[in-house]
Length: 336
Image 1 (cartoon, rainbow, N blue to C red):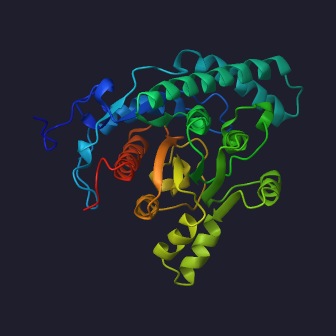
Image 2: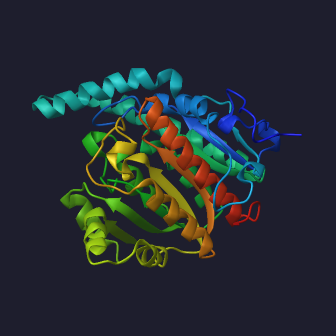
């Protein structure tokens, strides 16, 4: 009896009426921005995305009736109650590092223990949902929010990660924080079941990360934003470039979408905005082509959304596109 043309139900993801028990796809909201090294506020994004998503219209040009995929936001509020306390500790550590003062190692230990606990909680919740045959996605929070889901999926699949991001996130314990947002892919690759990492849109990185890519012996492919721009000037169309990207991925794919992978006009209040980046439709096209190539999206995340309505509106539409493409890859929806 649901009418997708009517106003969405406030307080539900995309205004949909589905309960957690009946959902095919479940979103885990992770209210975490403890270790961010620039602007905070991304911890509040899951709630704002939930609120703004009900304003989204539910038809797409390329996918038939995407609203038929049953989706729900998990009621569990992960990390919210203690994030601010540990964010304050992390800020003190970062301030000391940037001013050349002595760093309080006890504060780093407190932050590391908290972030480890959050990762374990997300992993546990994800495994329970996977055991119930749910598709699971994370709504962050900073990028470290998604690590627990990747670990949970690694207990079930061998897979590759398609990471859309301005940054590599391959630093080892950045600023002393073992679960830093800047270390999420470094930590993910510790799991041997995550067999490949393909990064798209990177434009801020350091020598440590470059060396790690070189030493990976082909386990990591990086498609730098500057190189993408150069290829466009040579009239290499995006379709051909996407084909090259997709050829690096295995059959099962996890999509990790840091919102700062987009051009900053789409995400001005993200934690670490960087000039350059993909357009909305370049990102959407790439994700859709992953599915059209026959690969299966086993899970995904959207992280680093700023705590502003515009940013949340963009993020909710990226989430909806990812969900719909995932639904197609599982045979629950179909392309037109």
